[in-house]
Image 1 (spheres, one colour):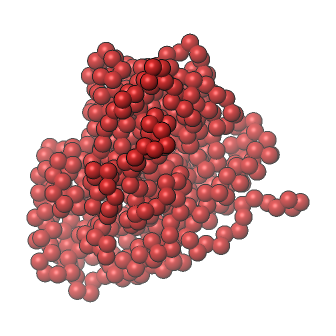
Image 2: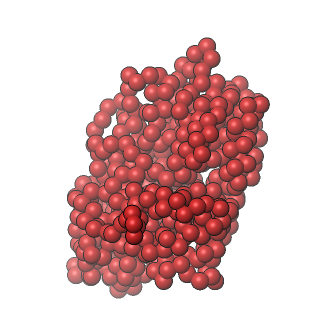
Length: 512
């Protein structure tokens, strides 16, 4: 992906587009892949980096949603299981099966959870992974060596999918570009252009060099997740009723020893009624998530101290070796773009994860809600509607069997010299991110092209000066640019550092 060439296409006033997408998270990128693969002239503009907001901060699971089955959302679970199967097939290097244990500390729980998870398997049909089974106490401990054995009767083992969210987002961006789309990051839409009351394009600004341009389009799609209402206000005015009720979920990253194996734990009952997961991810243990409503909409939300306390407390109830705050290598917080039921607020943990598609009087198409697992179906629905709104020639969707570019194998270079002994990345990973994956800033590279900041904040800080120098060398940037990038990373550190962290500055003081 060559950002300069793609921006040149976007700024060409003679260009006309069929579909312009605002938002470069899971939903927007999915729409770009769908639209471009059908042959429509497609452009996507993302105000920050691809997947920088919610879409890089998920629980890293491609799943049907066990808790939604408990809530009676059979249609959502069936749709999610179908899409899980398609993702396992279409992105085999980035999405893989993962086994889970539901531990039983009451004699009847193995049978209670086993019956529900067997139904879960049956709903997946031919796209299922493997069958649910019962485990004895010793078999359960063998799967989860650090699981508390006192009072344990055994467990239920079932299968779901796991992925690397921001790496999948990059694969989607590359796939869209490969099919002819112009997809760019760090480009903010500042205005919806209208003629006779109808949306006919957008005015945008490149946040890197300040270039401004206008795009003409047959239809514009708002796919901005938690920022949905800000784009709707461009269309409807400041008085527009909001439809998004954001909910914050955080995760903490611990050493691998806190699971001790390659099987995850699903904890079905927590103090706030959410399902909690502890999963192996990039040789770490990932624990989450929380549900905190009434939070502001922001690009990089910060985890709250009480949220970290909540996760450590619940982990301590199930692990033999209990984690402490000192064991937390990194944290991250994301906002769920939940759509208010009937326009009302309430307990966000009870709001459905089904997606919401709407078209305003001006013709702006808005796709809101949903979740990572169902992004492909959301994209298909959005493009089908955009065809109607824009009067485009109908072309069939082909993404159900479309292999994503770059998703055939893990891109991490296992042969090169590691940037840091606590991280699995090398210099070639940095070069590839800059030259092929549109990594423009230091946070782009350390947070999303690699997952260094998600895996170990202190290690990421150690490699930051050498990585930014390598980036500068490839891009011909100055020492002043390097310092600016280190300052940019400093701004996002609170998102990934435990709330009590007192980390020293990355940026040298003046005169040092």
